[in-house]
Image 1: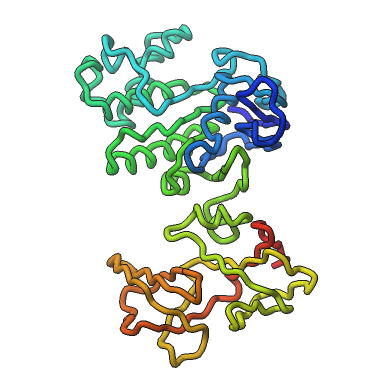
Image 2: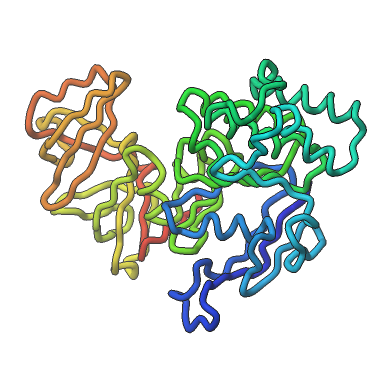
Amino acid sequence: MAKIHLNNIAHSYQPNPNGPDDYALKSMEHIWEDGKTYALLGPSGCGKTTLLNIISGLLTPSEGHVLFGDDDVTSLPTEERNIAQVFQFPVIYDTMSVRQNLAFPLKNRGESVEAINARVEEIASMLGLTDQLDSRALNLSSDAKQIISLGRGLVRDDVNAILFDEPLTMIDPHKKWLLRSKLKKLHQEFGFTMVYVTHDQTEAMTFADHVVVMKDGEILQVGTPKELFERPRHTFVGHFIGSPGMNFLPVSLEGNKAKFNGQTIKLNHDYSTDISDNIMLGIRPEYIAVTTPDNGGIIASVTNVEDLGKHKIVRMTIGDHTLSAIVPEETEISTNEVSISFTPENTLIYRNNLLIEKDK
């Protein structure tokens, strides 16, 4: 296992980049701790796979260095980095049995027959492949082949890191949940450093100790699922994490109050009167209380109510702005207008899309 240090790395697929827009990965400095699980999360094209391929050695960064522990591995090929990588589509040998596929990485490294058999049986049991060990991979379904590919990545217990590039894309939803649980169990047992690429926030938040949120080639925030939900440092993180995502409203500030659409919203902190341009208030749908319009508060017009069984999502407008609230299932929304209020301790203020940090 190894600490992964991304030392001022950046990458452009152009030979002579002229500016930030020419970089698929903009300059970044990050340390990912030994033995932790990380998820690279973001929309398609944000640079997740580029970053993973730089860590694995499939791609050499245009700038900067990659260190595993104290060792600079920037110029080392993949086979010399002692990592395992699992790709989006299965990489297996169809002519081999499941057992032979799982054993292949260990056989190549000269492990004893006894050690190989024991490890193959262990991984097969964990992934539900025991009954298929002697079947030819060619005859299996695509999701079974991907599970074998996953097993090939997990079978070695001496790697610096295991890298996953959207490995569960071809797996049916129920099996996805089971496999994520098994990966977490494997991590708890062996302490591998794991990096998992996904565009699915549920996968990221349920798998990883820390989630790395990316957009346009930049890392916007690295944090625990709780940190990303409670205190997103960038408005994009607030939008991207959560379902529905965070609401944002343009406001002006007066001490511990925000002014919006002629209404006053109480805040948990005083803010400088010098902060006046491009200010947004951010509030999660979970922290908006919805009551009848005669209860005071901010009046909003209801546009839709989605009943999800365990709770309701209330879609509303205030002037030209839309927002969503999540309310208990038993809440009755019987009028076109409601009164809403925000929990002050969960109401955040952003300037130029960045969270204004305040001491707790």
